[in-house]
Image (cartoon, rainbow, N blue to C red; front, side, top):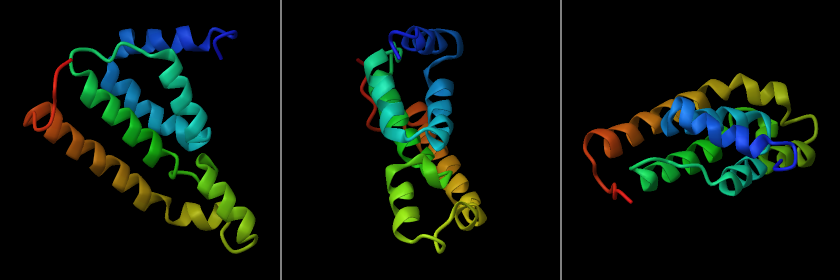
Length: 126
């Protein structure tokens, strides 16, 4: 990723759109690409998360983890279960209930926002 210039491009997104927006986008990306390499790329890029870096790192960790479950192949667990339960747990069967994961994804971001951005509970500025 570094060789292809992706990490530099990825880091520039944080400057252009802000950490919160990009970190939410990381969750959607990890729905398509397994969340382990997505989070690894974020860690290697080591973007500037701004003044509230601790809460932003918590956000990107949460969105990458939960976002990986939006689509069945977005996480190693989903791929593993599809292989183990061949014909029972499929992409189509997962997508019937993916909306519940999306609701959970959105609710978790709202809770994060209220906790860290509005109430400043547990947020430590670095």
